[in-house]
Image (cartoon, rainbow, N blue to C red; front, side, top):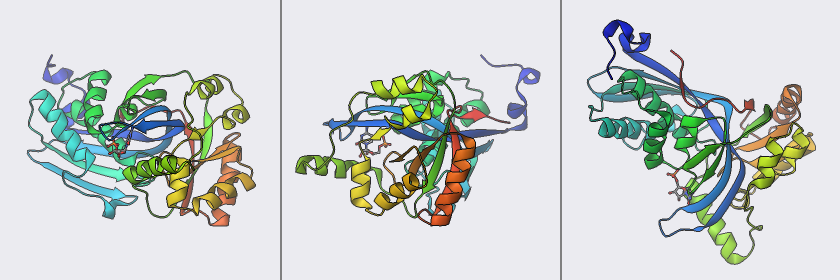
Length: 313
Ligand code: C5P
């Protein structure tokens, strides 16, 4: 349905839309065996946390992308960028021309296991849907997102969610309150496919830890308020692989525990490390201690859950 001009939201009239999108972490990442299609079956619990990228989409008669902020100079500006692919996928779905001028302001670390590229993709889908007035539902956007990458549907949704399949099937779950995290960003990234290949290799050698399997313990811990209970059940099957490829992560994780973190784990495929804190004050103190230890390139604090990709203006 098309709206009369005067009924259109301001961003449509002004020809520009800004969308804020969070980073994701995996509080439980259970990795199953390698499938025939090259993916692994996952049982994962995602949480969206308060580290954000901004995507500003303007009306245009071409498709163009510029980026500033964290890691900007290292990112592609062509079809290798998931945001550009998002414009094309939404255009193909709606029959509209793939026209938008995008500007991304990044503060989510690149190639860090926080899904920054996927976040920009999710934000671009939401932004172009608003800019073009196509009005797709979140479910429709999530199904386009699933064709672009496994964790992109979650970033359209946000909050806390159980992910199954290759991670693209997401269902919201109940989380009792707010959890406080310290995010330790390592220098340099890790390639996600390389980390998955490494867990397969370690499993073949028989040196990988037992698979995490079901997320039931984590889901139960989310329904109660004590962070110590949550700390005891955080698990990531990819951690052994990330540590194998980047052995210094062992010391990075250890440093957080030494400084009083309730738990330390690698985020997704790494190399970013996550530390669970008791509360916001504890997170700030922990971040300060980790910064002075110099074990991470950057240390940030964040809380979750927060909303997924949302239009802000
Ligand atoms: O889906 P996405 O493009 O984000 O996946 C990147 C890579 O991560 C895949 O090509 C695959 O190597 C690996 N992957 C996997 N199993 C998953 C998700 C990702 O093996 N469930």
